[in-house]
Length: 206
Image (cartoon, rainbow, N blue to C red; front, side):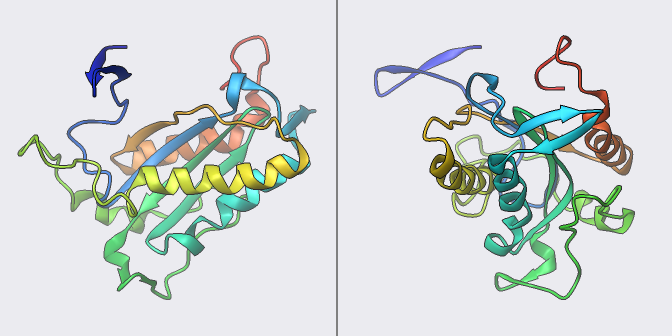
C-alpha cells in the first residue's frame, strides 16, 4: 500500500474511496476484525455461531448503533469468531433535526434481508464526489461512516476489557459501498450464510 508523509512521518493512505462522500446517504458492507485475528467472540459449532460473553457485547453494541446515530438503519449482521460483518445504511433524509422518524429500523439480527427494496431510493441521491479535491470527502467527523464505526469499536472495547483486558480490534476496517439492490441482497445473503460457510483452513475473515 502506498505511503505518503504527514508532518514528516510516513502514514498509510486511507483505504476509503476518495471520490465518495462518507457523510452523505449510502449503504455499506462493513467488516471489522480483531487484532491478530484472535477468536474473542466465540466459536462455530455445527455451522452455528456460539457467542462468548465478548461476542454478545459485539452483537448488542451493533444493535444499539441507531440509538447513538439516529440517521442509521441496520441491515444484516453477524458476529464471527474473529470479526463482524454488517450492513450500515446512512439515510439522513429520513431523519428530522437528528431525531428518528417513525419508520422502523431493523435491529433483529435473525431477520433475512432485513431492509427491503424501498429503502434503496436514497442511493440515487448522492452522485460521486469528484470535484473540489480539497474538500473533506469524509464529511463532518461526528456524522460520517468512520465516526459510526469508531463509536461501535469503542463501545465493544470498553465492555470486552472488563472480561479480557487484552481485547483489541485491528486499527482499520473494511467497507464496500453498496450501489444497488442486487449487491445489497448479495451482501445480505453472504452475511446470513457466513457461519455455515466458515472454513478455518480457507480464510479467517470469510
